[in-house]
Length: 269
Length: 173
Image (cartoon, rainbow over the protein chains, first blue to last red):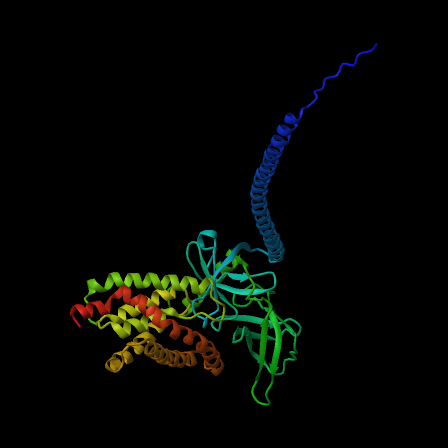
């Protein structure tokens, strides 16, 4: 006869009463333990997630800053390439790139300060340009900084010609970010949007630099000259870098011309 | 307020430092067509408050410091400053900077005088009224800004020069 080998225990009523009393307590403690463990786990998990979130937000912010810097560098690179390509078209000139650091303290003057000076090879009366056109010339320089008198200033005069008609005149700064071209005879057939360029006379500005476009012409029935307003090609509100052209050959020639004039006037050179 | 030289120099050096800070801020942060000339405000304060035979020298030094930041000729602006200072000296007894409103009004009046003198010289050099008109359009907002900030700047300068303290102490009124 086969024997079942099982193990069981028949419970009595007392056993059942005890079981029925103790088991719910066990159930409650297990429930509390389970719930406590869940809260503990969730707190730790949330704290880690919050810290990780903060870290990721900071990282994203830093990456965004880097992207912004790279974009700025990219734009600066494009501007400088354009400036260098333009500078290569001007023969026999040493080119010094500079950044604008400040404007004149008085709004009566249109002068900009750049962060290059005589230590970088800058000479007084060196022309300053950007890719779009003429900016001005160096009128004051120290060892590491220089001031540029722009063509917007009334004290700056540029010997210019109208590209199409080759009409000659003097361009000087006027108001409202415009220039005035003076001493153009009224018979010259200048029209609106004619381009004005430097003539090369006066040995400050090389020939062929763009000054601006003719935007207003007035011819009166009397007089020998006409009133011409020019809008400079350069947007002076937006320029950040400029190129200074240094031509030692031109300076030497200019100095010898001044010496000759002094000799003629009876003074010492 | 009469002061001796040894009392003037330290305060004046600090005033020049304040001017340098203001000029640096104006030339770098300021708008291209809005650059209030704080050197005028400092010259006006010295003219209102200081009685010293060498005040013209102080005005010259102030304008020379301004010249480091500007292309404006320091000799010409010194001459203008001295003329305005002379006008203030003659009218000193009629004026009192006793309230902010009076300060604003007086500063505006003498800025107008400064503008008139500069415009006369500008016309002599350019012979063109358009430059004067353009200068006037820029003068209006700049001068109003300076007049409104004058009480605050004068308060700062008062802390540097301590004119009222010296008056209270009864020294050299």
